[in-house]
Length: 149
Length: 149
Image (cartoon, rainbow over all chains, first blue to last red; front, side, top):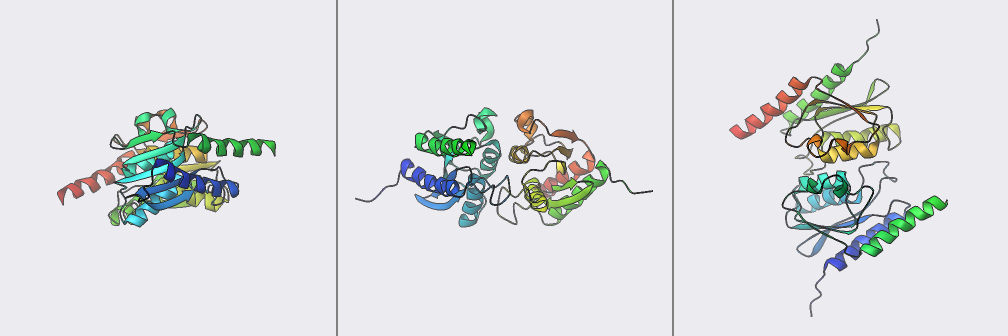
């Protein structure tokens, strides 16, 4: 039987990236971009390390995927990201014309859906809640520990 | 008499960046970021050269200014950009907490104000229309020539 990776498999790969961010004391968000059932980009939040507010997991993944494909549009690609994208990342995803976005946990404070659900490209489909509990827990744990320091 | 640079002066510096983009066959948008009346970052759109939808003038300017300052927040900084920022750039500017944004021409197709005026940080002030005609003309000329090819 051939192994067929599904949404949960890829979200767990994104979670591995989130764990790397956590271990580096960054807000723990991770992302992978998949084309033809293969991961072509992996990234995690690096805003502190790079001293750069634009260094979200999604932004780096978009840049890396475009490099891998040799073209700036992410047609036939799926982004798996542990947390709902913020408006900056949603705007970038719109420009990329990515085919599908799967996110784990909703972001009730900074998620793009708070601004406008129509921020994404009209051809982009969205799924949410995949491994939502695990994706949310790592962020909650991070901020709880931060407050405790 | 000491030379006191004003909004028009800095917007013309941003226009020089837009011209560089134009000369490189990129959508001609340019930006500078100013702190204490000095330019600390200059950038122009490089989406084609870098094959990267995130390489807008503003995004590069934010990253460069943070590097120059050694911190990720652009407090006491002003962005001068020739065209109204798109939602991605507005989202990034929100994260940067930049103090002031001055843009030249409005973008009736992709400007952030079409999505939500409140995309920026509540402490960020906005001025528009500075050298608006010149800032708009270079974009109009670019797309007119593109269509003619």
